Length: 107
Image (cartoon, rainbow, N blue to C red; front, side, top):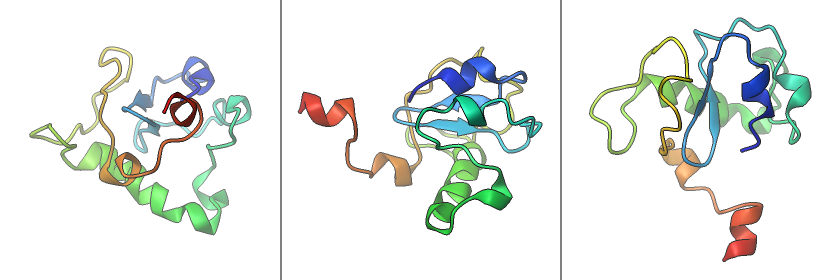
């Protein structure tokens, strides 16, 4: 969850979940500023998304379009991530992933 991409986003469309960052598909202007600063190369234009990551495209959309665990309503399009701060919750797909990086070292 390196936040270098968040700092580069001119429209504040990268939202922080519990274990992942999510790019709002309707708020993003496709400027590409976030892509080169992502140290783990996790950001792709939709047409360039590798086949093995396609499940995450729909999952990213669900972060905004479906109620998240513990929330009654979908997040929708709040118009910017900054005022919301870290939401501390993820989609079921991301929440079910095994710990990675520093989380593994702390176990």
